[in-house]
Length: 422
Length: 131
Image (cartoon, rainbow over all chains, first blue to last red; front, top):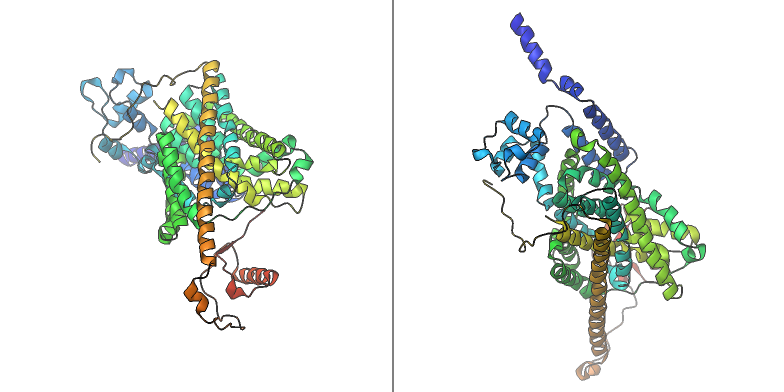
């Protein structure tokens, strides 16, 4: 009888119901995960990503599941350091898992990491080495039509101006005391490009991956609410009413040559951006060449869907209660919003300038689409333009700055990695 | 997958920008970053403009060459004109979030507006745009 009671006691102590009350923050994180699931499933805020992120967050905060162990990745990064210089938490983790390192120096092999890691640790490898964001970019490239950009190359200026949000948020993060690598990762939220944000943060500040990715995707979903007030504030009704001339047709040769030229030029200028822009342009070449339809179809459907599942779930898993629930997360969420607003301002202000210079031929509203977030930001330009003038049709004009913003944010990420990558 | 991961990269330079920056240093890096982004995209804009000019010129030349009839061709009798439209249609159309019935209606409206029979038009795809 005593044995049975002891067994039951042991079973109870290994149960998640026991574990969940050992730290109240786990319960808070489960509630947050459920709220994000609600936003994704019911409110349909970027559901393809938010559902995966929220579920990853849920899994990682259920006690004793051993799904994701950030300490393992910390140890892997700490290879070569003396154990006594590690934080007490990491030292306790080493003792708990029975790792034996010769000479008191951390030497965790990749095999040991995989053996000790959980399911989400293994999925996280794709984030850590930058694989998933690059593959997502390949799918995005296969779905993107750069025709509006080729028809109106001036759109690239608007795409560049809208990167202002990245650098303003970076500065604000420096002011409130973030180290430069984290500040750069926070700034990239202003690029309004989820894969780019994840790619850069996984390299510069992996501990902040969850709040940055969540902020980036949440604000992308909220663009129809975030942008219009700023758009109306920075433009007059007369400007918003401006009708733009029809875009010139773009030949197939131009569309095929474009990805090749962009790849050669940008990768020579900033080699660090090659994984992102190289994949984006490869996907686009699949689409435009006309001889790789099957590859284009796979890149924009099957591959994109599979990678999205892995990316979203493993990014969500990084939001473990002891690393996510702190004042830094709130600061990042606020800075992310400011980054989006300043990015919108940057595009709109250059749009205004172009309106003046061209004598009212360019509607400044298309400038706000320079923040990436394809195609949501372009739709917002169209909607606000049509509110001012029902016969206005800005969508195709806004797609130019919109896709230019994707290239611009990737270039900005490449710059930040080159400067702040350790 | 044993041992350590091996990555290849450009020769690593000592990075002075890692750590805490002062506000002044931050401003300098922010300005430098914006300049790099503008430089890259302006340069890309110039390249695109050159690309467009070159390819358009070539296309115009090809078009002009096609318009001059070859002497042998001029001697040939005129082909018999068919008054009745070519039967049937060819090719595939991709539908995104669009019902086939709606697509058929859209194609019919476009053909009617342009005043051309459907089999002389080429539709590549129809996509629903949610405003």
